[in-house]
Length: 138
Image 1 (cartoon, helix red, strand yellow):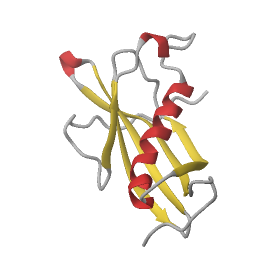
Image 2: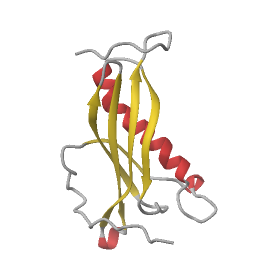
Image 3: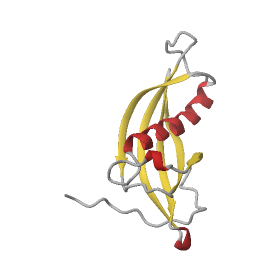
């Protein structure tokens, strides 16, 4: 089995490129899986929440997740990691907005390291009060 590719260690204050910080959270003991790492489904839920922030602003109203186009777990997330979620919009269509989310973990406070643990591409659709697609405002 191939070992995960390790990202270079970053400064905890470095903002990755043109991304915006949209969520910061610390996983709790209830979020641990049978292996002692943070459950992947919990991370996926947080990525969906973080990914929705910018599209909701652009859509100026309700949105719904319509696709998880890619999801990569680069490294395990551990109890005690502080997770920072950065997002950037990659495409705006007639009714949909695609976004790229990167997740960084701050770990080992005594000798602080910041590593990329997850990245994903998601698509959201702007919806009206009946849940039907509506045009994204221009």
